[in-house]
Image (cartoon, rainbow over all chains, first blue to last red; front, side, top):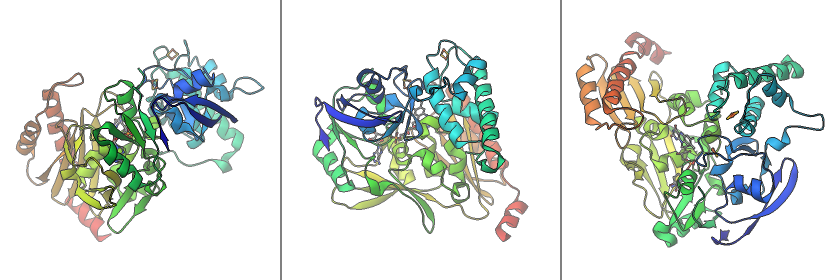
Length: 175
Length: 281
Ligand SMILES: Cc1cc2nc3c(=O)[nH]c(=O)nc-3n(C[C@@H](O)[C@H](O)[C@H](O)COP(=O)(O)OP(=O)(O)OC[C@H]3O[C@@H](n4cnc5c(N)ncnc54)[C@H](O)[C@@H]3O)c2cc1C
Ligand code: FES
Ligand code: FES
């Protein structure tokens, strides 16, 4: 493939379970494509150099900076953003826990943090507080001081473990 | 900010990637995980005319344990290597050092070879590769490959021995040898930030190889004798690296860290009896 700099390329991907297409120039960042072309404005954009984590989405399940990825690189991939979390029944367990523990204030950082936490919880069933803090170190929050987030993640990990039962627990505490 | 305009190329094999690199000359850049390059492009610190994406080249996606080394292909992310079963046993230094590279989220996309190619003097992987005396494998558009010892590959800040039309296809980390101890230490502002000083050590009986990152313009190693007081030699080593003041730390603090942490790393290894025991076992 060779796309010219001013060419508008059709990009098709699966966004939150639905196939979506739009057009992007080679230099269009994934975060801008999601927001401006597909209208998925839940994902926020902060620093645009990978540091703040506001733009974090899941690419084929992996929490990734959407400001450090081009829209054309997302062709054919599975993208999940904060819009995927709440279902018909309302907020997800993680979102509810964030609310209960005051894990957000202005909310600018929250969309990215939730996506990191979701991937983390899917990989680490029984995390230590230190590991949760390590995962959260990839995000900047100027409001909360992170304590509420740590509590929310540990609580959801616990409740999901109870829901799945002891037999299905993964033992990957040292990821 | 947004990147300046560039053409985007997605070659399907190594030869084609090198061919495109050769044609475009200095106007082209390779992109792998984008965790360093995209930030540079967004800030317009670089404005290449062509971006050549190697993430889609399938035969670069491998981790292979061979006779005496672990080979990691250019398609492998840092997260994938960390998840490789038996990493702690195969290359224990990597298992200790890699959690210090950026964050969970950047390791998900950043590649192992990309970090070697980028050659940031504070980066953990170049330090490990140099300390372990690993190799970088490069291939050009004629399909010819060459191997370079890590110690010769890094030539300065973001500067390596890679030629303009070459692709790093894999890096080779020597496997752990029985009885040897591997240690890693880092001091940074916060976990996940680039190192102010990073230390990697290989303890082989009385012989300790100490590598230091984050101070000189590239990772640098020295060999120490565990039976001698390292005070003098460590001090000389610390001064030889040409530490500079920056926003994160003063040069004096960096030298102090090398002296203190270096001593800890050299002296804190297993005793001679423990090593002898491990060798018998
Ligand atoms: C917030 C943040 C924190 C970070 N912290 C750290 C840290 O603490 N320690 C650390 O080491 N790194 C850190 N990084 C950078 C690290 O994540 C990058 O993954 C790594 O430096 C580059 O790998 P990449 O695959 O992303 O390469 P890219 O960004 O795609 O490329 C980097 C450079 O290498 C070249 N290149 C890439 N692959 C090849 C190849 N196969 N052959 C030849 N040239 C190639 C590219 O042309 C480019 O010049 C951080 C990044 C971010 C965003
Ligand atoms: S906007 Fe992407 S990490 Fe800050
Ligand atoms: S809630 Fe405001 S930045 Fe995190």
